[in-house]
Length: 233
Image (cartoon, one colour):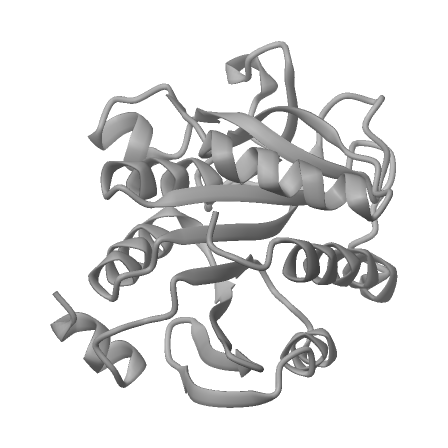
């Protein structure tokens, strides 16, 4: 344990909690995340960007620009190698039903696997976020009076944008690309993983053209979770 981690993160033992920020995060928002901490202990940017940060006596691992199932699978194995116990995944998603408004918060309770790694290689149809993490996230949102939708989401191949909805379960509320993989691999390795998704676009509207509004919403969610989920659950 720790040999891969030392190469990737500069040390063999990692913080117990990791925030994974999926997708293309603007530089100003990334720096706002970092400003929530007192000190940056480590930084490296290759395929993805990683920071080890400290706030008072608490350390977190922050991962940015993580794209697609293959990358997040490798990353999750590295986190396990370094002793990470829990992952909080924050990403954006395409809203499928018309009832889920742009800017809505989604707390996934089950993920349909349509991306290649889990559905084809491991032949799994579903993966599930950790129940304890789901409850901790919902409690944090409640305490900050943040409304959310809890439900089933779907992960699709990273080469697709909007694949045929014929493959989706009828009750899926949002679409993204990485969550089924990180939940599946984390569970197999004995780690806890929970997630929050922000609906960025749907068939009628999009916030992708107004990244300021989208990522301000995203930032609100991160600050809420960091403040309320203080200890490893």
